[in-house]
Amino acid sequence: MGIPFQLQSQQQAKALLAENKIMIKKETSPSEPFGGQPAKNASTPKPNMATAAKVNAMVGNRTWFGGLFTGSGKKRQVHAERNFEMTPLQEQRMQKLKDRLNIPFDETRPDHLTSLKALWKVSFPDTELTSLVSEQWKDMGWQGPNPATDFRGGGFVSLENLLFFARRYPASFQKLLLKTQGMRATWEYPFATAGVNISHMLIQLLELNSARPKTLPGINFVRMLSEHEDVFDILYCIAFEMMDAQWLAMRASYMQFNDVLEATKAQLERELSLEDLLRIQDLPAYNLLLK
Image: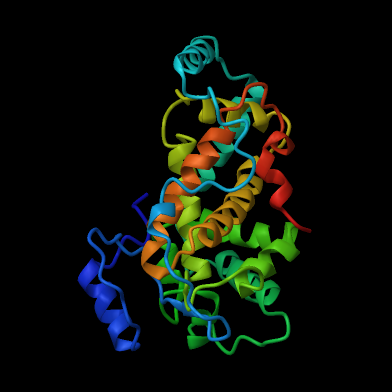
């Protein structure tokens, strides 16, 4: 699976923004864009970017961060890896998840198109989709009129993740889709393409392309599979909420999305490295989800 949405060079992104008459502040070390049309938030003025709050910004309670990556923390991680063996149930569920990751989005498959239509319906229940190829998709944050092009970077699982989020936690999903909370930037991250990036980030963090996990976050994830077969999808919803919280904490705008995603990945890695983590509800960020 390729890396999704690292598709535009810095020059291409600047050209895109210039074309839309977006003023970009020159930075000494700009971030690479992550793809997608920047979503304009006309109702809220753009806040000043706090450059010191980049990757180091963390949201939520920090008291449990200490000691996780100290010498003793590393010993605990090595010890956990050395004694970790998957149960038959964990192996079965892990294989089922890996099989999902290998399914590309196929616009010739009726079931894939049905899922795509369902995503629109749960996202905008009062607005009819005129066609599967339509400029309307840009309202959700896709790069162009055909989402199938964007799904090629993340596979069918990235569509499944978005659809799961919309159905299981509709209040959280709508809040993030419509950007209804917080001091928003004038040019917001495109919701849908951000979601595909989050799917890809989780696959990397949890080492799902490896034969077996070697780090504590991956090992704890496998342990949680015993309690929740859909833990990957729930973790995706949590990660999306964390990313938006980071976005607001860092007062970020379109060109800073990759910095925000890295900060989100770092915080999620810390939470997944907590000792005695057996259930998805044990994650501190689980409380961000709204039904």
